[in-house]
Length: 209
Image (cartoon, rainbow, N blue to C red; front, side, top):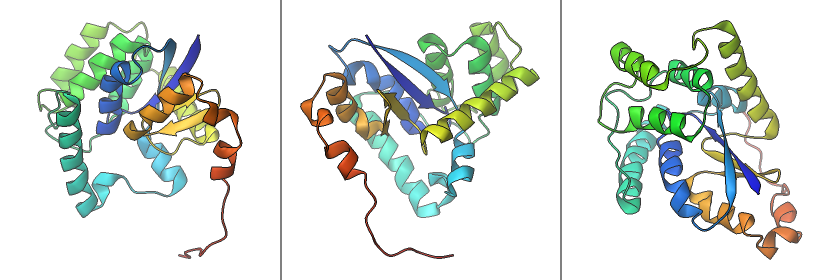
């Protein structure tokens, strides 16, 4: 049975949509999922990018797009009261509780259902009681583990969330799920040279500054 690594940060609506849609997208396939929380902002810093919500026209489009995608896939979604927000307490809670599907589902729905403030102290406390983590989410070892997982993702070439890893290949975004399914089912395209050839750099203009 093959294992899929699912790199995620609950601040990302696309990570939420991919999480909810994954069982349908991979229906009929046999696989396990290794849920790996990371700090999306750490990816942005490393790769020198801005988040979608940091560019006003892109923010407007992103929020409309996720509303459409939720409608298209029949997934309940309400924007949290504030977005973007600091996801660190939720990411650390995921690690402290052990990021299995039950934990990640509770985390994602805490953020993306109901339209409340994802960082509200009382709500986070209630979520913590619900998940009953075996470790203290505020402990130094949990904080260090989150940094280490983020660094490990960067070392693998992860630049955004959601990212799925299968057999050493990275698949980025909700839109990559059909491609991930094909790879999981052994599509012959992945056995040929196209994957490597398509990813080769081409000479072109380099923007400076």
